[in-house]
Amino acid sequence: MEEKSKEQQTNIICGRNPVLEAVRSGREIDRLLVAHGVSGGSVTEIIAKCKSRGILIKEISPQKLDYYCGGANHQGVAVMFAAQEYSTPEEILEVANSRGEKPFIIVCDEIEDPHNLGAIIRTAEACGVHGIIIPKRRSASLNATVAKSASGALEYMKVARVTNIPNTIDFLKNQGVWVFGADMDGEDYSKTDFDTPCALVIGNEGKGIGTLTAKKCDGIISLPMCGKINSLNASVAAGVLMYEVVRKRRTK
Image (cartoon, rainbow, N blue to C red; front, side, top):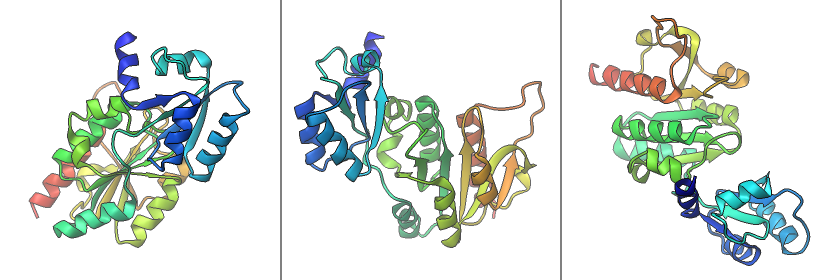
């Protein structure tokens, strides 16, 4: 527990005045953490400024905030910073354009385990993916655990954080990107032509892809399951599918 607490401190500022100044500075903030029952004074101003900037605000127990802050005097508030600055879907497409390559994007639909997100980022970088898209809510963010699990790959991978995944899929499709969702009830992945501008949607570890997200996809693809287990770890499934895209593009 102590080791993880120290890790959390690498990207967190706690205490009312330090937090207020961090928010005022315009620095990119991942989320504001507020202890249950804390309000009034500068906390009200902090929350208002975070809302105006669209910063995610999360209420947690005082005990959990103690843990995140490693025992420091947090006065009921703390802000967490991303291990790397977030990009936008437009910037991800620009990376592909600047390389003269067909866009290759990973969309993570509520991947909540930071180790999974980190592993996906690591494999994506190895496969030449141009960027990863995650939602603002119900998703792991670019914290210290993700950065560690990515083993340095986060430094070379653009990650966009968006408000609405279905709307972002519509945007990608309007830009000529074919979007394929991974689900156990889909078509055999090996029959899909990935030699196009494409995005792979990887769903939540337990629930899979959201219903609306699945409806927005151009196609649903699946991996064959030959054993008694009917699903794979999200990062493992993502890795298999990413390398299938690489294989298809190299054999064309």
